[in-house]
Length: 102
Figure (spheres, rainbow, N blue to C red):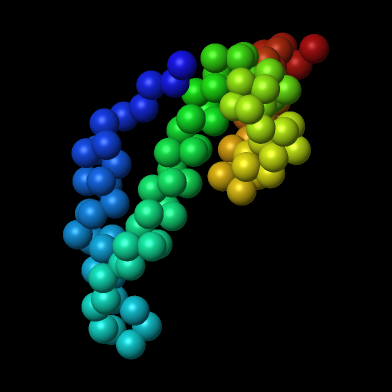
């Protein structure tokens, strides 16, 4: 089971006045279309669900794909599109340096 943030939180983020009415190249202000807001909200929810499932499966992508009921390849593409790095690709602590130079 996956628990998500409240719907109101996602909606509040989407309706942030600074993002909803940003000027275009000509300086005119246009509201963001409902279609693009919906698409962005769906991507963000999907990203959160994938991250939670990956973490609950200790970043085992094969198990996560099974739990999400999608193919491993689909999960791989979703991870790439969402910009989610694998656990191995995350930066680790730098190697310890011996102060004596040995």
